[in-house]
Image (cartoon, rainbow, N blue to C red; front, side):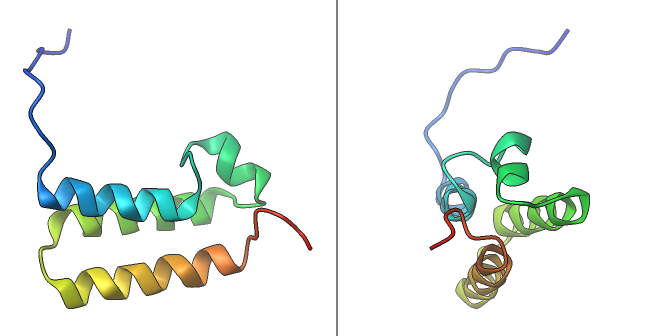
Length: 81
């Protein structure tokens, strides 16, 4: 059984990670990404991006991650015009 921990306010890193997550879609779950046509490899990339964003405090690293997010999501538009 998991140990329960008190809820704490979000740190800056957690807020930045949330921003990365929200760039993908309202949800980063499998249904949201597969609807956009993403597969296993893209999910691995997404997990890596989130992990790197959470661990970094360097604005230039976070900007690079943001660019990678835009590059990935541009290949899988939510809506086809």
